[in-house]
Every structure is written in C-alpha cells, then in structure tokens.
Image (cartoon, rainbow, N blue to C red; front, side, top):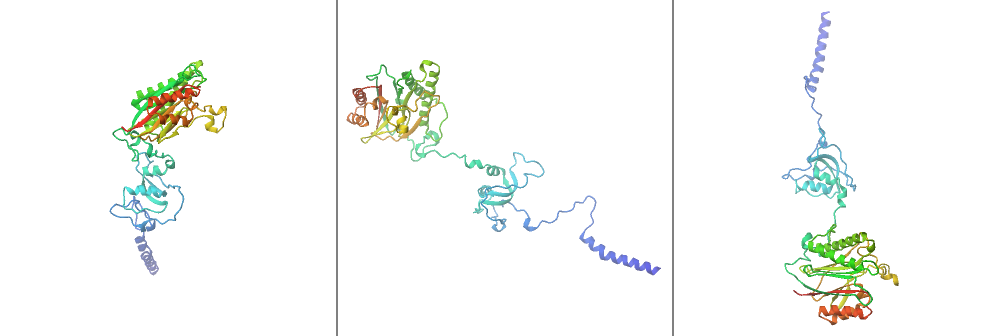
Length: 413
C-alpha cells in the first residue's frame, strides 16, 4: 500500500516538472489589475511619418508600393480623432487613401523642401495632412472658379498696375484738342442733337435724339447731362467689369446711367413714352496715350491716320446686323433710354500724333460719303473751319436731318 502511494506521488511530481514549469515561462502569472500587452505589429504594417525631418531626407525605399492609377478620386479612411469629434480649429487630419500628388507636394513644401517630386498622379498616404490642404483637395470647384487675367495691353494703372507694354507716364504723351459744331439742318423744325466737350477729362460725346419719337431733344440732352454729372462728381453706378480698364469702364457705365435716367423720365410722363437717343463717346488718356470709346446706335466715330479714314464704331442697325437692304436697313436695333437696360459697345484705340478723330450724328453720314468727309478733313487744317465745312456740306447735299460733328486732333505735347 505504501509503495502504491509513493509511485503516485512521484508520478504527480514528474508531471508537474514536465508541464507546469515550461508553461509558467510562456505565460507569466497575471496579477489583479494587470493589462495584457498588445500583440506585436508586423514590420511591413508599422506606421511611418508622412513628412520626415528636414535634416533627414526621405528614403525612396520606404515608400509604400502601389500601382499607378489615373483615378482622380480621393478615398478617406478613419476619423480626425477617435477620442472626440473633429473641431473646426483642428490642424491635422489622419487619413489613408489616394490624394493628388499636387496636394502632397504642397504638404511637403513646408516640411521637407528637399523631398523629390513624384511622377504619379495619385499617392497613397498614411499619416497626417494639414487640414487646409485637405479642404483644398475636397473642393474640386476651385479649378473652375479662377478668373482669367485681363488683357495686359489694355489695363489702367489704377486697376492692376501698369503693364510693361502700356505704362502710364508721369507726363502727357499726346495733346488733345477738340472743337464741335451742330446745326438743325434744312428739313427739321428743331435740333434733337446734343454734344458734350469736357477738355479737363478729355471726354467728348455726341447724342442724336431719335427722330420721329416724342422728346428726342430731351433724351439727347439728358444723356449728355448725365454723363457730364457722372464725371464731374466721380460717381459711376453699376458694377465694374473685370478686365476692363477703369477709364473705359467709367465711360461705359456713364452711358448706362444715362439710359436709366432717360427711361425713368419717360416712365413718369406718357407724352415722353418711347423717347430715346443714340450716343457715341470717346475718352482719352494723354499720359497712357490711349483712347476708350463706347457707343449705342448709329452715331459714329472715325479716325483719320496717314490720309486713310477708318470707321471705328459699328452701327447698331438692322442692315448691319442682318445684311438686309432697303427701307428697314437703317432701323436701329438698340438705343439709349427705350428700355431699362441697354448693351453698350466698348473698345479702345492707340492714338498717334497727327491723328484726327471725328464723332458725328447720322445727319452727316446720310448726306456725305466717307470719301467726301475725308476730302474735307484733309483739305482743311484748321479744326474750327473744318467742322463748319462738314456741317455746311451736309446741308448743301440736302440737310434732311440735324447734323453734329466733334473733331479731335492729336498733337505732340
């Protein structure tokens, strides 16, 4: 009986030595309150820094391999912070996914300027990306909202600074001299034309009240008065057009102001309903050696240079718009004051010393051809006599309408 007990005891001790002691080494005893350590992370899945320190250039061999894809989509995995919701002032967002390489370049530019650029369109990232860059990546509409730059050869110094090709000089490059003449003609009872000559602004206007409509003379006079008031008070209503030089934009906006003024007056008096006027205006910038002109209707602007006369404006008539001929060809397609809004045509020119500009109502061009007008301009050097001769010639050829001319001569200062 004692031998049996001894054998059992030795067996228990042997089993304990064989099994219990190795197990104790593999699995140490845990005390109450102990937290088990996390399992080890494989080396190929260990996280790495997105932006290594400046002093340590990134090792290209540490980049996560991925096939090049053409997709522009951005895939985000995870949250800004697992412990709390992201707030607006958070600077960094942890993400895993594809981000355009341009954003990666931006994120690296402040941390590691020596990082080599990537040829891939997309890059897989694990780490933190500045929140401002992430917001930029998440706004694809930004690609289409960039406004095109204005034309560099037609800017004013007060808008975007003087461009190299068109600087504003400290002194006048040209001298602008102007004279004006108007006449009722031989068929009309009263003169519906008006003109404006503001030498201090190098601004000149001709307005032709619409014949056959009530208040034509009032419309043309009101147009000139509105333009003059806008320039004297330096107050121009409406939105400025981006890319248009300031001086030219003010000219076009002053005509739009005249349109509203005429329209509002006509709306308040049934007798004046439908009144309107054509208009042509030019403004010079002697220091820039530029000219800005705008017009509505069939009053015209000509330039004579080197013995050649060129019409700078385009008539807003049915004939000009459609090419038809006959009685309807001279009908206007737009005029100032007949509607609440009007489209003002605007352009610019480069005046040269020796040029002559002519603004006129259609009372001149209906009676004289361009060649006849050019003959008068080239034969008479004196501006006052030349303007008077043009009006007289129109009357001699019938004088069926009011006729107004403004002659402008460009000379060296």
